[in-house]
Length: 148
Image (cartoon, rainbow, N blue to C red; front, side, top):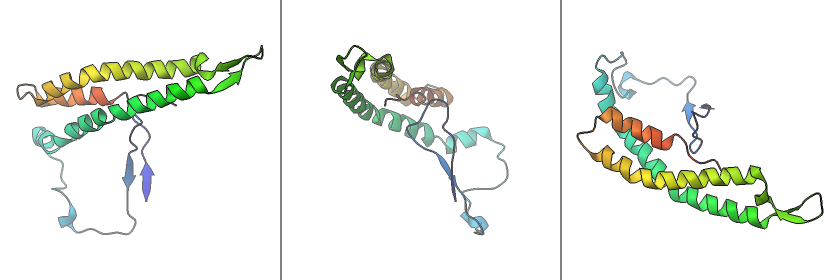
């Protein structure tokens, strides 16, 4: 059985779910490690150290898709016409409800294009604390554009 996890703060580019099995018994050897609570938190962070790298890669990799999506959205909003109360045809882009998502996406694209190399440089710097690098990748991926 798979249960969809509610979206987390701001991001909606990936869905997260929990998969569980009913009446399936696994041997202890199927576990990835010891079942007791770890006492060394640094060990935990070293084990999951690849998660921030994946987060960074996914979010930077989605930037070209965000650009394409924004262009399609803008073109559609300029082409799609509606009739205003006076009988004139106007593009739906003339409505604030169309403009704001487009402007937000454009702003995010510009900021993220400048921010990505900066985050990558600091993430790869061995003198930067791993926790700080992890937080930078989380900050980078927490607010993808929501257009359409």
